[in-house]
Image 1 (spheres, protein in one colour):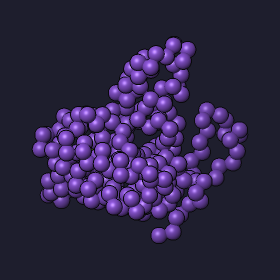
Image 2: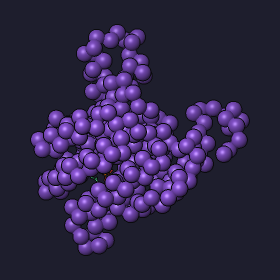
Image 3: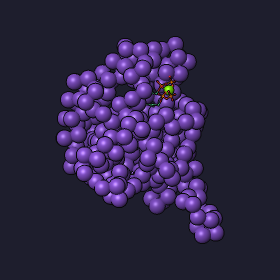
Image 4: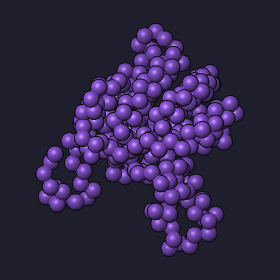
Length: 243
Ligand code: IPE
Ligand code: IPE
Ligand code: MG
């Protein structure tokens, strides 16, 4: 498929809340786990399409800190799926020159998942074409609290506590803020996602359930993003004509 947009109209950082696997499965009489498996297939295609388009930073919300509250067998199957996904994807990530990065508290994850993550992160460390962030056991509020704690540990004086100093201690340190956040499944909320980084992100909500979010859906979201007029607090006149 041809890239629909000029590179300057593409987000530098695209973040997605992959929601609706459960409802997708339910509508088909399948188990929630089967919904998550279908979600993984969609995630794989999504990453490949972003890479093809040349988007430099992609973030996938795979498991929130709050998702620990789900039934134990669903949580276990999600981590097992994650581990298998990482094993299977390593060669593709290397071939596509993609670097894997984790956003979230890895310490609390099951040992095998942690090992698979550490292995994939280390093996793909030289990837230059794209950073693929997996938000796993992630909480935006906790990320900010941790960054604050680290500023104290680093001995920063009050005047040294700046937005930049805090941003440098987030999981996304060194990466641009998300230009576009996509959420599938019709929910109109952020669910504790990238709370510091989303200050000026454009938001795109679609009723499409995540396993159905294909390349055509992504192209539609990107085409919508390209029409957005980002003002960053200025007046429309200061920004110039709408694209
Ligand atoms: C998103 O799908 C995947 C995760 C949260 C891990 P859901 O499992 O939340 O699907 P719904 O919202 O129940 O349909
Ligand atoms: C957000 O989806 C987290 C992920 C997609 C991993 P949820 O389904 O957990 O969000 P809520 O509970 O509907 O806000
Ligand atoms: Mg959900």
